[in-house]
Every structure is written in structure tokens, then in C-alpha cells.
Length: 292
Ligand code: ARG
Image 1 (cartoon, rainbow, N blue to C red):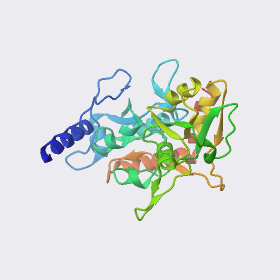
Image 2: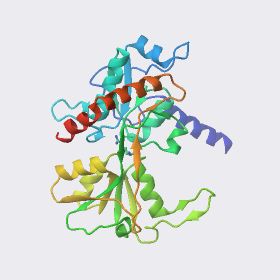
Image 3: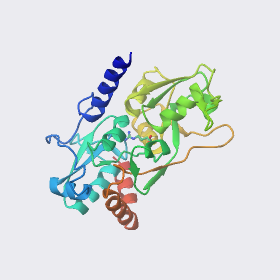
Image 4: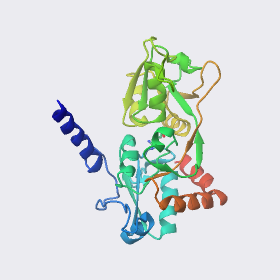
């Protein structure tokens, strides 16, 4: 029994360490190379400079933060622009790896990539595995539904099939409401959608979830505000509303860039974010990528 467990564990760990476990990659056709990690001196910055490249992990299905350009099919967006500024600051080229969202944190933790930039909400859970930069954007969750559906609050999703992107904050929120939570003391707490017939359906991206919404396979999609608005703008017959609870409370989230724990890269990332913010550049990136 123990042995079977050990083998299973080894397989899971191998999947986390080596590339190719079902990940989609997009590095602009360049050969895939490992991230800088840390050099003998323990400096990630030195290793990145020696390698001549900064490896960014993202999931390019989250406009305007990251999406595939219609013209070039390359990953572009606000986060790519920020990462490019970090690469410029380091004097290296930027390599973008487009992977499943839920593999970004483990990849950064394992040193496969240098930075994770994916409209990623800073959460205590993720902070156990990686460090986060200062935040550069805020968001709330949104609900996408067909135009004719009346939804004013989360509670109105009772009985519905709700699509989410695997591993996102929207995923944990809906999972909690559909299946119940545990509070800090480990006590079971009833979710507001529990026992209503509501069900959660996980997708690799909000784009895929939205396709199923259009096909009528699910009734709603929960995802961050700006991607929700972008998806609705691109597809007829849909609308989106803020995710609010019947008591008026809502979710608030802030995005940060993640790096391996205790990495000297964090100071560089924070310095660049501050500079971009002071120069009004991040707002500019948002505007540029919201019109595309
Ligand atoms: N902000 C949400 C989270 O951190 C969703 C991020 C999804 N990002 C993406 N590039 N697909 O969980």
C-alpha cells in the first residue's frame, strides 16, 4: 500500500518538475529553455543575466492581461508589456511560456520559469509556494450569463451549471458555494448554492467556458471583471454582472507577479512596477489592450 502511494507521489512530483505534462507552450517558436533559477551565488538576477533571458509563465486566455494576438498568434497583453519592461531593465530578452493557469505557481516554485504574470490574484494559499510583487491592478469577480437571464446576486445561480477556469479564485469561490466551505477552525460551513442543484464545471480557460455557455451546455461563467467584459464584447447574446452576494458583499482581489521564494528578482520586479505606475504606463497598457 505504502509502495503504491510512493510511486503515485513520485509520478505527481515528476509531473511538477519536468515539462510536458499536458501543457500547451507558446514561446514564439524558440527552443524551450529552463529559467535562470539561481546561480552558485544564489542570485536569480545574476543567473537570468548570464542566460540572457527572462522566462515568463502565463495563461494567454485572459484579455486584456494576456491573450493570443490575432495577427501573430503570440501572447500579448498588459502582463506581457510589464514583463517586457522587467526584461529590458535586466537587459535580457523575454521568453513567454503559455501554460494551463493552475500550473503557473508550481512551475515558478520549481524554478521552471522566472516570473508568473497572469492577472494572478495574491492569495494566502499561493503565498505558501511563491512570493508576490507589489500589486499592480485590482479586480472583482463577474458573472457572465445569456442576455435574457436575470441574475442579481450569486444566490440567483441556484440550480445552475456554472463554468469556471480551473485553479482560479473564481473556481475556489464557486466550489465553496456549491460544495460548502471549511472555516478556520475546520468546521463545515454551508455554501449559498449548496443543495440547490447548482453544479460547478471546470474549464481550462474562461474562453472555453464561454463557448459552452453559448452552446447552452452551462448557464453561467464566473471570471474576473475585465476578461468577463472582453468576452461579452466579443460574443453576441451575453451580458455580465458584478458578482455580489444577496447581503451586498462582494469579492475584492489584487494582482501581483509571482517569483520563487526569497529571490533577489523580487526587488527588480517591484522597482519596474513602481516606475511603470509612476509613469502612468500600466494604465496605458490597459487602454491599448482593451481595444483589441
Ligand atoms: N485572478 C484570478 C486568479 O488569480 C484569475 C486569473 C486567471 N489568469 C489567467 N491568465 N488565465 O485566480
